[in-house]
Length: 257
Length: 118
Image 1: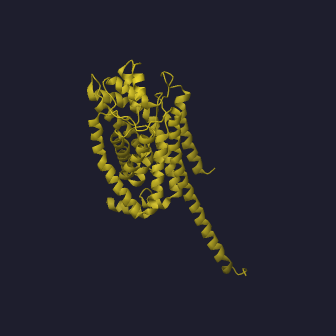
Image 2: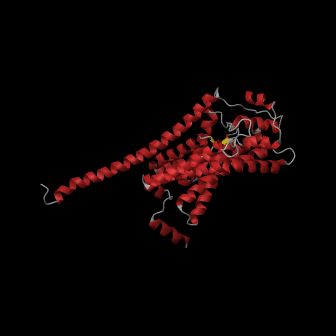
Image 3: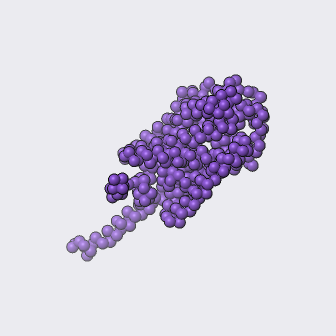
């Protein structure tokens, strides 16, 4: 890697500056997790992706009409993870777009769609990497969708309006992805003096500031797409349980009692 | 403009504002390289925390220049946007087709019901 050896000489003045640079990375770069970490994250991610492939094939077999919407969810992730946006910290990062698919089709299916996006970026763009694919899949395609979906379900249970739940679902999916990335980096590269927790604290604090405006953008974009879906695909959303029919609501209440 | 379209436009405007404000306010001015791409710098940073760390694997394919890389990123966004546009276009077309079919069926049935109709 030529750019690395060229730029190392310049040196960063403080550890804070160094950490700030690492934190801006969305996907961990190729070869930048020690082999043991890379293998461990790969092993952790594999079952989720396998399970996701099975739920994806089941969904397509049972509801062939949902293939189009599945494609659209994957496409949303493609668009958003290609959008590098400036943030208030003066650096660029990009959203993940995994919240929408997780809300529509549940997180396991998003594990597959997110992995496809990450593979595309790793193979064609040298963004992320094959050796770090496991770690990146874990943060963006597994933890992000599950966290976002969890918040979405929780808020729905409290009768929060649909679009508000969608916003916070997408917001949390985006932000939690970056939190996991910072944990992964802190585990692999603990601070020489304060160790893992010190590195995590620094990573986390900088992450939050850089990523919050982008997570807000992602939430708003997801709300726009969901609004368009509500206009165009009522039947599909009702079948997926995102839109509740009157009788469905009553049924749910009955179940709750 | 319908109320729906106006809300969507406002949401888009908010996203655009979130992206443009950091640039307008010059929030990147304190940096040597404001709003830089993160990857290469992050790689440098890790080698600075752990000077002995050697990346043990390099990408199979690396875009030869920044221009090619941004072209590939644009390709990724275009692919996604294309599929999304196809989806919404198809939905809209189907809805219009259904409405037209219903209207045509009603028009075909109507003349027989009205007394003045032949």
